[in-house]
Length: 472
Image (cartoon, rainbow, N blue to C red):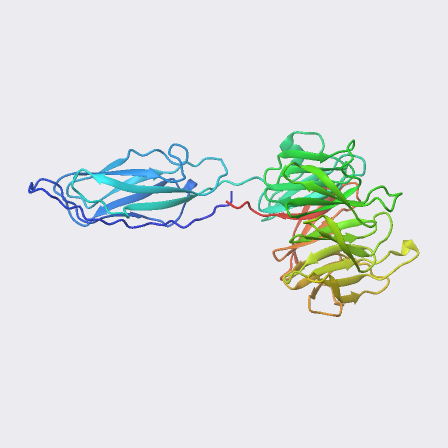
């Protein structure tokens, strides 16, 4: 686990121990306080010293009794303590050792509360704040958090789709993690996309007609929704989450332009509970609160709209006209929707220009349209901050979201990206190479557009996803 340091709250507990006896041999310590040498600890730091000190020297040994409470457990998170310590005669302080246990379990931060309860002078008065609170953080991590997950389509009908993990520092690459973790032969055919919700990842398997549900941090299999012999999905593509439900676009039967739909998944039961009919070719899908936007790319044909679904009623409210073949969508910081359309390719005999549209999500109207040349067919729209990025003709371009004219100079040239993502100031792009052998993940630093790394992944890498560290 990525080490997290939590604040150590050390309350200096003070109280006056007052003797009610005339016996000069009775120990009468002065103000007693608790302190620790550091203000944060992780379980791998070994021994934590808790110092008990007094402002006066005592003629006799003083036994100080204490209790240890909190969310941490003695014998599991730390070695159990005796419950008392002796302050030797003539000394002003004594140290008790809290020995932390460095286990391999991934867990949340926990508290140890050390409280003085009494001393050997029974007439002493213990102050109300005589305690110290230590917050202990874990130093373990899940195997696939804080890094990049790459989905691979694999060869069509070969059942060799897979998922790879690349660590955030780009030093580690693990391919076929689903197969390795679950000790199975195959994930399935054509991993089209992946979505996250809470601690789960949902892998949309286009060729296998299913959604595979896994723990996003361990990749242990949780459930399989649908399958080749089931009727839940028909050519599923992409998934978004809204109102606690999963929404999966489906192209339906390629010979039937009227059977396309969005499947609605109950994420509690991992079952398809209903479907929503939409126009032909639902592809990318994105949610803003409880409103869902579905790009109508056209599936096996061509289309040019964005269908809007109310996730509270699961009904279509409108369809917004955009450019031909919308292929990617992003929400900006204001919550408005940018839609990039490639235009119809030349082989359709009706070639049209690419187009960027900005949609005001308050009233679902198009406020800005920027056109490309007829022969330009952009894709892979990304956004970070106020900058839009897109891929066109082997180059990546960047433009400010306030611009109304397309840039003429690319940021990076000579690329062959099948998909790309912009994450935390880095450009990640996957190259499918010859579509039969292993592809690669290329990473660029967008501050100076330099290549940081090129990593070999698996067959036909088609999706890039940032899997952040789990909240502890």
